Image (cartoon, rainbow, N blue to C red):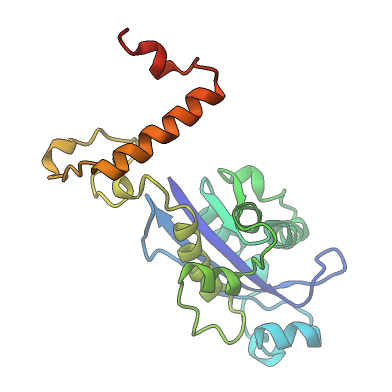
Length: 235
């Protein structure tokens, strides 16, 4: 599956009130591997950034004056994103800005062109309820190096988000994901011959066996003797 991690920087917080995109960063992940086929634009927003926004991204109005306008990069961006699953941290914010920019050009919304949008902020809140789930907090929690992030930047944030996402979704299938032949080029999951791996067999010691039996007895008592393993035991 082709996945694209996307982040934007903007002149302010409200697309509906006229704020515009000033930077777009996209990072491509194919079969859970970074490809280096990234996309990055600075965009002339045709208006100045709010003071608070400048403190966040540090991209000056003068720097953006000679950059292309959104209409000049829109088709390249659409072609790049088309058919991909797009992962965004706090997706409604970035999607609202992309949709508003496309609306100005007479285009429809971006989502019908994509293979879905995943909000990594929603994922993080489900995994770490009650904790801070901003990008910096997730980097610290998951061991992702964000030492170069003194200000927000769309491409850097998209790269960090890709690392965070890989760590958030690395589960019990990690062994399979690390095998180069786990999937074919079209994304089909392939059968893996595990006989080529020399897997050690660790036999439980007496204490572990007794502890296991104690747990089974407790479960059996709670089920009033109706557990499957008791029913299958020879009389």
